Length: 187
Image 1 (cartoon, rainbow, N blue to C red):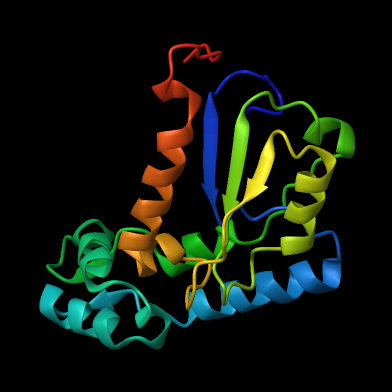
Image 2 (image 1 turned 180 degrees about the vertical axis):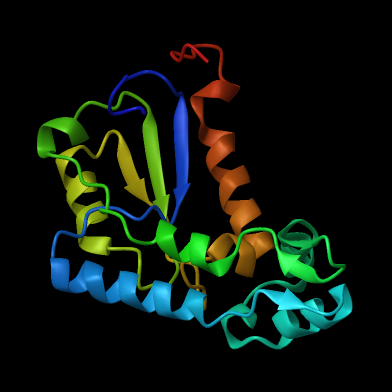
């Protein structure tokens, strides 16, 4: 949105934006992995307790902070008309979301934002394409910057290390223009 309409925001702090990769071999490999992993997930259980236990022991959710997982499950699990506990978003629907083009901007578009844009990625992420973010920083260092990779985190870093993510946000907000008198955004 900031690229399309500069000065919409005063500051953007972005965690793991999926951006930049052009190689169809790489993007297809990632999409195939995400789709396959999602489609392997069960979608229905005889009780909420059974569903919670399933997710608490599922390898793909091992790295999540337990509070994050509990909050996710509060909204993700619903009872259907038969009394079974099911995922509110069926894995078939979730998997379909992963079959899309990855967002890319031209150099001209990358020069459009007027606000500071800070990127964070997980140290173990397969979806944070560092060279593309480094390119944006080199192209426009007054706008773009990158935080240190979050150790032991994947693409879901905000759900894996709540405290570090919150501290990164607070530290960046302390330097952000909305907390000064001369804001430029229309929001």
